[in-house]
Structures are given as structure tokens and as C-alpha cells.
Amino acid sequence: MTYKSGFVGIIGRPNVGKSTFLNSVLGEKIAITSNKPQTTRNTIRGVYTNEEEQVIFIDTPGIHKPKNKLGTYMTEMALRTLDEVDVILLIVDNRADFGPGDSYILEALQKVKTPKILIINKIDLIHPDQYATIYYNYEKLGLFDKIYGAEATSGKNIDAILKGIQEYIPEGPMLFPADMITDQQERFLISEIIREKTLMYLEDEVPHGIAVGILSIKEDKELLSIQAEIYCEKKSHKGIIIGKEGRKLKGIGKSARMEIESLLGIKVFLELWIKVKPNWRENELNLKDLGYKLGNTDI
Image 1 (tube, rainbow, N blue to C red):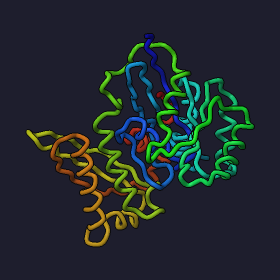
Image 2 (image 1 turned 60 degrees about the vertical axis):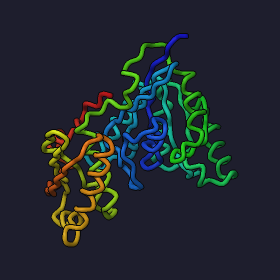
Image 3 (image 1 turned 90 degrees about the vertical axis):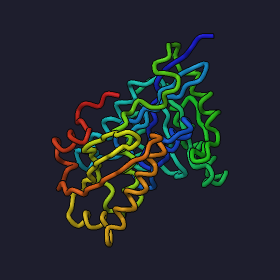
């Protein structure tokens, strides 16, 4: 039997379930999720391997009209993926009408010849009549080679989608070790876990101005010591993150520590500090320090 390997780009508007879909495919959590938009800021590579194929999924930031340099970086990265993969997965949710964000994505898809698969996610929230309307609205565009409904949280229909993707994956060698599920470095995964827990604990106006920098990681016998800074843009946000008597920050730290221990299989000592970096999303030097490289969005 000939082996297959290739790349699949996952795109869509913010908060439609792209990261949840990727985690469901892999059976493990490698991409952070939250109910707040723009959770994913970098391309996350997930590696799915079986006896017949290896598929590298690239989870991209939600495509949106940029409001700052960070937003520009995120959107550039997502759109560039379209020309550099073997299959494009567009994930939409239970909203039947096309908004400006949908139109922007569909216009971009018309310019590429890459095979395209549409996934209508969150079907557990959709009445059959509404699903039929969404399906028809996209089918009549003539853009998509296949259309599936899915419920990424429960994994419903994931196997059928994987089988459909396989049709478009070219012959090729295994590119990563068979037991590897992501190429992301430990430092990045730790920072993303901390950021996810921060998103969970914060008010709606704060998360977009949050970033996490890892200061140091030291392993001594059976203990991993991590020092990290949570960056925010305003002094008032610093107080919100810390919370009354420091309880919110303690909750963030405890929740992050427990997940890091589960991920790495080692006891963790986690120290968190809050640092104000005014307007960091518009500062190219700050963005570079935090791993966001404008104009260089290689996947």
C-alpha cells in the first residue's frame, strides 16, 4: 500500500471551533480553546498519523478585519496558509447568514485552486431546517468539493471528515515520528496553557490585550520550575487580573499548573507576575519578543 502525507489548513472566522476540531481529531489537547474570539494567535501544527497516512493540520488564527498590528499578523498568517496546503478546511458555525467576515474569507477562497472542504460545526445547536439552509447557501457557491456537518466538542462525524480529507492527500513519506502529535515546543505549549486559563478568568474587555512570556524553565530532579509574566495593556487591567486579595491570579496559576503537570507528567512549581506593556499590540518590537513576526508567516 502506498503511504500518503500532506498538509491541511483549518480556517474560519474567530470562535467557530477550529481549535476544538483539531483537538478532537488528535484525541488530545494541543490548541487552547475559549468562548472568546481570537483565542488562537499562531499557527498550531497537529500531526495525525495512522497506517495509511500522516496529515499535518495547521490551525490558523480566526480571519477578521485587523484593528492593530497583532491582528494584521494573525490575518496574514491565516490567509497565507491557503496557498501552502494540500486541502483547505473552512469551518463555520450555526449562523446562517454571511457576514462581512464570511464574505472576506469566501473571496479569498475563490482565488486558490486548493481542494476545499466545508465543515458546518456545532450541529447540536442547529435545527435540521436551519442546517439545510446553511448547507444550501454554501453549496450554491460551487466552491467546495465536500460539505460535512460536525460537532467538534463530542467528535461527531470526525471520522467521516478524516476519510474525506484522505482523498486529497498526495503520496509521500512520513514527515514526523508516528507518536508525535504536535511540533510545538514545550515553552510555547506552557505559555498557551497559561494564556488560556487567563482568558477563562477574565472579563470580556481584557483578553485581547493579554500575552504571556516565559522567563525561565528549570528542571530539578522531579520538579519543573516555571517563571512567567502575563502582559496587559493598562494598569486597570493589572488589578483585574490579580483580583481581590490576589484570588484571581491564584486561580489562574493553580489551573495552569494542574494542566501543565497533566501534559508533561511532572510536578510543577509555577510563578506568575503581571506586567503592564501599554499598547503592545501595536509595537513591532514587543510583538517580535512575544513570537509574532510581522511579514514572516511561514507555516
